[in-house]
Image 1 (cartoon, rainbow, N blue to C red):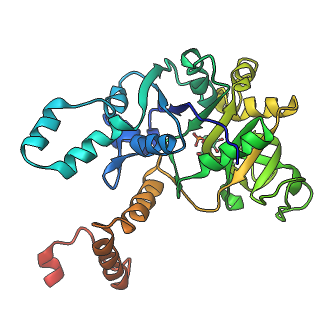
Image 2 (image 1 turned 135 degrees about the horizontal axis):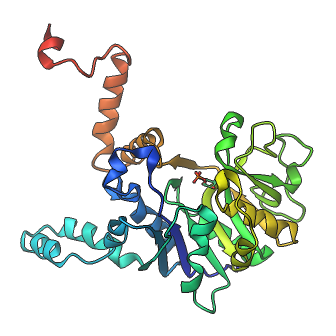
Image 3 (image 1 turned 135 degrees about the vertical axis):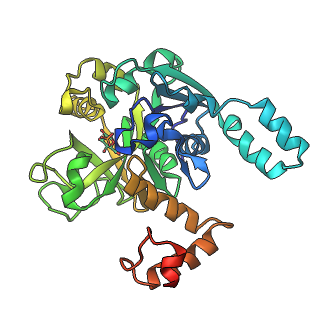
Length: 323
Ligand code: G1P
Protein backbone atom coordinates (compact mmCIF):
# COMPACT_ATOMS: atom_id res chain seq x y z
CA UNK A 1 0.00 0.00 0.00
CA UNK A 2 1.40 3.44 -0.87
CA UNK A 3 2.13 5.96 1.82
CA UNK A 4 3.18 9.57 2.26
CA UNK A 5 6.75 9.92 3.44
CA UNK A 6 6.91 11.91 6.66
CA UNK A 7 10.10 13.99 6.80
CA UNK A 8 9.68 16.79 9.30
CA UNK A 9 7.58 16.50 12.43
CA UNK A 10 6.74 19.75 14.18
CA UNK A 11 6.16 19.78 17.94
CA UNK A 12 4.72 22.97 19.42
CA UNK A 13 6.26 23.32 22.88
CA UNK A 14 6.23 27.03 23.58
CA UNK A 15 3.36 27.10 26.08
CA UNK A 16 3.69 28.28 29.67
CA UNK A 17 2.17 25.11 31.12
CA UNK A 18 -0.16 27.12 33.33
CA UNK A 19 -2.40 24.12 34.03
CA UNK A 20 0.58 22.46 35.67
CA UNK A 21 1.91 25.21 37.94
CA UNK A 22 3.85 25.32 40.17
CA UNK A 23 5.82 22.40 38.66
CA UNK A 24 6.15 24.20 35.34
CA UNK A 25 7.57 27.35 36.92
CA UNK A 26 11.05 26.01 36.26
CA UNK A 27 10.52 22.66 34.50
CA UNK A 28 8.92 22.73 31.02
CA UNK A 29 5.88 20.47 31.01
CA UNK A 30 7.29 18.60 28.02
CA UNK A 31 10.07 17.35 30.32
CA UNK A 32 7.78 15.94 32.98
CA UNK A 33 8.25 12.17 32.89
CA UNK A 34 5.65 9.58 32.05
CA UNK A 35 7.13 6.88 34.30
CA UNK A 36 10.77 7.65 33.38
CA UNK A 37 10.57 9.23 29.94
CA UNK A 38 9.75 12.89 29.25
CA UNK A 39 6.72 13.57 27.08
CA UNK A 40 8.92 15.24 24.45
CA UNK A 41 10.89 12.01 24.00
CA UNK A 42 7.67 10.01 23.68
CA UNK A 43 6.44 12.16 20.78
CA UNK A 44 9.91 12.17 19.20
CA UNK A 45 9.93 8.36 19.29
CA UNK A 46 6.43 8.24 17.82
CA UNK A 47 7.45 10.58 14.98
CA UNK A 48 10.66 8.62 14.31
CA UNK A 49 8.72 5.34 14.18
CA UNK A 50 6.43 6.88 11.57
CA UNK A 51 9.50 7.65 9.45
CA UNK A 52 10.25 11.27 10.39
CA UNK A 53 13.94 12.12 10.20
CA UNK A 54 13.69 15.56 11.77
CA UNK A 55 11.90 17.08 14.74
CA UNK A 56 11.34 20.81 14.76
CA UNK A 57 10.48 21.91 18.27
CA UNK A 58 8.72 25.24 18.50
CA UNK A 59 9.92 26.61 21.78
CA UNK A 60 9.98 29.83 23.76
CA UNK A 61 12.40 31.67 25.98
CA UNK A 62 13.42 29.72 29.07
CA UNK A 63 12.50 26.32 27.65
CA UNK A 64 15.94 25.37 26.29
CA UNK A 65 15.90 22.20 28.36
CA UNK A 66 13.37 20.68 25.96
CA UNK A 67 15.95 20.75 23.16
CA UNK A 68 18.87 19.96 25.48
CA UNK A 69 17.19 16.64 26.24
CA UNK A 70 18.22 15.55 22.73
CA UNK A 71 21.88 16.55 23.02
CA UNK A 72 24.72 14.32 24.07
CA UNK A 73 25.89 14.52 27.69
CA UNK A 74 29.50 13.26 27.53
CA UNK A 75 30.14 13.62 31.27
CA UNK A 76 27.07 11.61 32.23
CA UNK A 77 27.71 9.04 29.52
CA UNK A 78 31.33 8.57 30.61
CA UNK A 79 30.25 8.13 34.23
CA UNK A 80 27.63 5.52 33.33
CA UNK A 81 30.07 3.75 31.05
CA UNK A 82 32.78 3.68 33.73
CA UNK A 83 30.26 2.31 36.23
CA UNK A 84 29.25 -0.47 33.84
CA UNK A 85 25.67 0.86 33.75
CA UNK A 86 24.99 -0.08 30.16
CA UNK A 87 21.22 -0.25 30.62
CA UNK A 88 21.12 3.37 31.82
CA UNK A 89 23.56 4.44 29.12
CA UNK A 90 21.20 3.04 26.52
CA UNK A 91 18.30 4.99 28.05
CA UNK A 92 20.31 8.22 28.16
CA UNK A 93 21.42 7.91 24.54
CA UNK A 94 18.02 6.97 23.17
CA UNK A 95 16.66 10.50 22.64
CA UNK A 96 19.66 11.77 20.69
CA UNK A 97 19.60 8.73 18.40
CA UNK A 98 15.97 9.00 17.36
CA UNK A 99 16.09 11.75 14.75
CA UNK A 100 17.67 15.15 14.09
CA UNK A 101 16.29 17.83 16.39
CA UNK A 102 16.23 21.55 15.87
CA UNK A 103 14.24 24.37 17.32
CA UNK A 104 12.53 27.54 16.26
CA UNK A 105 11.46 30.21 18.71
CA UNK A 106 7.91 31.49 19.01
CA UNK A 107 8.49 34.87 20.59
CA UNK A 108 4.90 35.47 21.73
CA UNK A 109 2.14 33.05 22.75
CA UNK A 110 -0.16 33.69 19.79
CA UNK A 111 -1.80 30.30 19.46
CA UNK A 112 -1.25 26.85 17.98
CA UNK A 113 -1.67 28.09 14.41
CA UNK A 114 1.01 30.70 14.96
CA UNK A 115 3.32 28.11 16.55
CA UNK A 116 3.00 25.82 13.51
CA UNK A 117 3.55 28.77 11.17
CA UNK A 118 6.88 29.44 12.94
CA UNK A 119 8.22 26.16 11.47
CA UNK A 120 7.70 27.15 7.83
CA UNK A 121 11.10 28.88 7.31
CA UNK A 122 13.02 25.72 8.21
CA UNK A 123 11.09 23.31 5.98
CA UNK A 124 12.94 21.68 3.12
CA UNK A 125 11.91 22.68 -0.41
CA UNK A 126 10.88 19.15 -1.34
CA UNK A 127 8.54 18.65 1.61
CA UNK A 128 4.91 18.84 0.60
CA UNK A 129 3.50 17.81 3.97
CA UNK A 130 4.45 18.00 7.64
CA UNK A 131 3.41 16.03 10.67
CA UNK A 132 2.39 18.00 13.76
CA UNK A 133 2.37 16.26 17.13
CA UNK A 134 1.08 17.99 20.25
CA UNK A 135 3.15 16.74 23.19
CA UNK A 136 0.22 17.15 25.60
CA UNK A 137 -1.57 14.35 23.79
CA UNK A 138 -0.43 10.81 24.50
CA UNK A 139 -2.08 8.63 21.85
CA UNK A 140 -1.78 4.91 22.55
CA UNK A 141 -0.99 2.51 21.09
CA UNK A 142 1.31 4.21 18.60
CA UNK A 143 0.80 3.82 14.87
CA UNK A 144 -1.91 6.32 14.01
CA UNK A 145 0.52 8.53 12.07
CA UNK A 146 1.36 5.61 9.78
CA UNK A 147 -2.36 5.09 9.07
CA UNK A 148 -2.76 8.82 8.44
CA UNK A 149 0.16 8.73 5.95
CA UNK A 150 -1.54 5.92 4.01
CA UNK A 151 -4.80 7.87 3.94
CA UNK A 152 -3.02 10.94 2.57
CA UNK A 153 -1.37 8.81 -0.11
CA UNK A 154 -4.75 7.55 -1.32
CA UNK A 155 -6.90 10.65 -0.79
CA UNK A 156 -4.46 13.55 -0.87
CA UNK A 157 -4.81 16.70 1.19
CA UNK A 158 -4.52 16.67 4.96
CA UNK A 159 -5.31 13.94 7.47
CA UNK A 160 -5.95 14.33 11.19
CA UNK A 161 -6.46 11.99 14.10
CA UNK A 162 -9.87 12.06 15.79
CA UNK A 163 -11.10 10.58 19.02
CA UNK A 164 -14.72 10.17 20.03
CA UNK A 165 -15.17 12.06 23.30
CA UNK A 166 -18.15 12.29 25.67
CA UNK A 167 -20.40 15.12 24.59
CA UNK A 168 -19.97 17.09 27.82
CA UNK A 169 -16.21 17.29 27.19
CA UNK A 170 -16.35 18.33 23.54
CA UNK A 171 -15.87 22.07 24.20
CA UNK A 172 -12.21 21.48 25.09
CA UNK A 173 -11.33 20.42 21.54
CA UNK A 174 -11.24 21.21 17.85
CA UNK A 175 -14.33 19.38 16.57
CA UNK A 176 -14.96 17.78 13.19
CA UNK A 177 -18.03 17.94 11.01
CA UNK A 178 -17.77 14.68 9.08
CA UNK A 179 -19.56 14.03 5.80
CA UNK A 180 -21.04 10.66 6.59
CA UNK A 181 -22.20 11.68 10.05
CA UNK A 182 -24.16 14.70 8.88
CA UNK A 183 -27.78 14.54 9.84
CA UNK A 184 -27.33 11.03 11.17
CA UNK A 185 -26.70 11.89 14.78
CA UNK A 186 -24.14 9.66 16.41
CA UNK A 187 -24.58 6.94 13.84
CA UNK A 188 -21.35 7.34 11.90
CA UNK A 189 -21.55 5.79 8.47
CA UNK A 190 -18.65 5.05 6.19
CA UNK A 191 -17.60 7.91 3.93
CA UNK A 192 -18.39 7.19 0.28
CA UNK A 193 -15.67 5.06 -1.26
CA UNK A 194 -13.97 4.51 2.06
CA UNK A 195 -12.93 0.96 2.77
CA UNK A 196 -12.07 1.70 6.38
CA UNK A 197 -15.03 2.76 8.53
CA UNK A 198 -12.66 4.70 10.77
CA UNK A 199 -11.61 7.02 7.94
CA UNK A 200 -14.07 9.84 7.40
CA UNK A 201 -14.15 12.86 5.17
CA UNK A 202 -14.23 16.17 7.05
CA UNK A 203 -16.53 18.90 5.77
CA UNK A 204 -15.92 21.44 8.52
CA UNK A 205 -14.00 22.02 11.71
CA UNK A 206 -14.60 24.31 14.66
CA UNK A 207 -12.38 25.15 17.61
CA UNK A 208 -13.84 24.59 21.07
CA UNK A 209 -17.54 24.95 20.23
CA UNK A 210 -20.25 24.97 22.87
CA UNK A 211 -21.93 21.60 23.40
CA UNK A 212 -24.95 22.88 21.45
CA UNK A 213 -22.87 24.03 18.48
CA UNK A 214 -20.57 21.01 18.28
CA UNK A 215 -21.09 19.32 14.89
CA UNK A 216 -20.12 15.88 16.27
CA UNK A 217 -18.32 14.26 19.18
CA UNK A 218 -15.22 13.66 17.07
CA UNK A 219 -12.37 15.74 18.44
CA UNK A 220 -8.87 16.56 17.19
CA UNK A 221 -6.41 14.49 19.22
CA UNK A 222 -3.14 16.29 18.62
CA UNK A 223 -1.88 14.41 15.56
CA UNK A 224 -1.95 16.17 12.20
CA UNK A 225 -0.54 15.37 8.78
CA UNK A 226 -0.85 18.67 7.01
CA UNK A 227 -0.35 19.56 3.41
CA UNK A 228 2.08 22.43 2.93
CA UNK A 229 -0.92 24.50 1.84
CA UNK A 230 -1.58 24.97 5.58
CA UNK A 231 1.05 27.71 5.74
CA UNK A 232 -0.68 29.79 3.09
CA UNK A 233 -4.00 29.21 4.87
CA UNK A 234 -2.47 30.29 8.20
CA UNK A 235 -1.32 33.54 6.63
CA UNK A 236 -4.92 34.20 5.61
CA UNK A 237 -6.46 33.22 8.95
CA UNK A 238 -7.53 35.82 11.49
CA UNK A 239 -7.23 35.36 15.25
CA UNK A 240 -10.09 33.19 16.52
CA UNK A 241 -10.98 31.55 19.83
CA UNK A 242 -9.21 33.30 22.72
CA UNK A 243 -7.83 35.91 20.32
CA UNK A 244 -5.26 33.34 19.14
CA UNK A 245 -4.39 32.12 15.67
CA UNK A 246 -6.04 28.71 15.64
CA UNK A 247 -4.76 25.80 13.56
CA UNK A 248 -8.36 24.58 13.43
CA UNK A 249 -9.47 27.78 11.66
CA UNK A 250 -6.78 27.42 8.99
CA UNK A 251 -7.86 23.81 8.40
CA UNK A 252 -11.50 24.98 8.18
CA UNK A 253 -10.42 27.53 5.57
CA UNK A 254 -8.71 24.81 3.51
CA UNK A 255 -11.86 22.69 3.68
CA UNK A 256 -13.99 25.62 2.50
CA UNK A 257 -11.66 26.01 -0.44
CA UNK A 258 -12.06 22.38 -1.50
CA UNK A 259 -8.86 20.95 -0.01
CA UNK A 260 -9.46 17.30 0.98
CA UNK A 261 -9.35 16.70 4.74
CA UNK A 262 -9.95 13.32 6.35
CA UNK A 263 -9.81 11.95 9.85
CA UNK A 264 -8.60 8.62 11.08
CA UNK A 265 -10.72 7.81 14.13
CA UNK A 266 -8.42 6.43 16.80
CA UNK A 267 -10.18 3.81 18.92
CA UNK A 268 -7.34 3.27 21.39
CA UNK A 269 -6.34 5.30 24.40
CA UNK A 270 -5.50 8.98 24.67
CA UNK A 271 -4.35 10.97 27.66
CA UNK A 272 -4.01 14.71 28.20
CA UNK A 273 -0.59 15.19 29.77
CA UNK A 274 -1.09 18.94 30.12
CA UNK A 275 -2.94 18.82 33.43
CA UNK A 276 -2.23 16.89 36.64
CA UNK A 277 -5.37 14.71 36.42
CA UNK A 278 -4.69 13.51 32.87
CA UNK A 279 -0.98 13.19 33.55
CA UNK A 280 -1.58 10.91 36.55
CA UNK A 281 -3.85 8.64 34.52
CA UNK A 282 -1.24 8.47 31.76
CA UNK A 283 1.53 7.63 34.23
CA UNK A 284 -0.53 4.85 35.83
CA UNK A 285 -1.64 3.50 32.45
CA UNK A 286 1.91 3.36 31.10
CA UNK A 287 3.35 2.06 34.36
CA UNK A 288 0.82 -0.79 34.55
CA UNK A 289 2.24 -2.30 31.37
CA UNK A 290 5.87 -1.69 32.38
CA UNK A 291 7.84 -4.91 32.96
CA UNK A 292 9.52 -3.69 36.11
CA UNK A 293 7.03 -1.29 37.67
CA UNK A 294 3.77 -2.79 36.41
CA UNK A 295 3.28 -5.89 38.62
CA UNK A 296 4.12 -4.24 41.97
CA UNK A 297 2.05 -1.17 41.08
CA UNK A 298 -0.94 -3.35 40.23
CA UNK A 299 -0.63 -5.19 43.54
CA UNK A 300 -0.32 -1.94 45.44
CA UNK A 301 -3.31 -0.37 43.67
CA UNK A 302 -5.46 -3.44 44.35
CA UNK A 303 -4.50 -3.28 47.99
CA UNK A 304 -4.88 0.47 48.21
CA UNK A 305 -8.29 0.55 46.54
CA UNK A 306 -9.44 -2.60 48.27
CA UNK A 307 -8.97 -0.88 51.62
CA UNK A 308 -11.66 1.52 50.56
CA UNK A 309 -10.72 4.77 48.89
CA UNK A 310 -11.74 7.72 50.96
CA UNK A 311 -11.14 6.12 54.33
CA UNK A 312 -7.37 6.44 54.03
CA UNK A 313 -5.89 9.62 55.48
CA UNK A 314 -2.71 10.43 53.54
CA UNK A 315 -1.71 12.89 56.27
CA UNK A 316 -1.81 10.28 58.99
CA UNK A 317 1.49 9.08 60.41
CA UNK A 318 2.41 5.43 60.81
CA UNK A 319 1.96 5.85 64.54
CA UNK A 320 -1.61 7.21 63.98
CA UNK A 321 -2.41 4.24 61.78
CA UNK A 322 -1.20 1.85 64.46
CA UNK A 323 -3.51 3.65 66.85
C1 G1P B 1 -5.40 22.07 20.93
C2 G1P B 1 -6.17 22.33 19.64
C3 G1P B 1 -7.48 21.57 19.63
C4 G1P B 1 -7.22 20.10 19.89
C5 G1P B 1 -6.45 19.91 21.20
C6 G1P B 1 -6.06 18.45 21.39
O1 G1P B 1 -6.12 22.68 21.99
O2 G1P B 1 -6.37 23.72 19.48
O3 G1P B 1 -8.12 21.74 18.40
O4 G1P B 1 -8.44 19.39 19.93
O5 G1P B 1 -5.25 20.69 21.20
O6 G1P B 1 -5.42 18.26 22.60
P1 G1P B 1 -5.48 22.94 23.46
O7 G1P B 1 -5.69 21.68 24.22
O8 G1P B 1 -4.03 23.24 23.25
O9 G1P B 1 -6.24 24.08 24.02
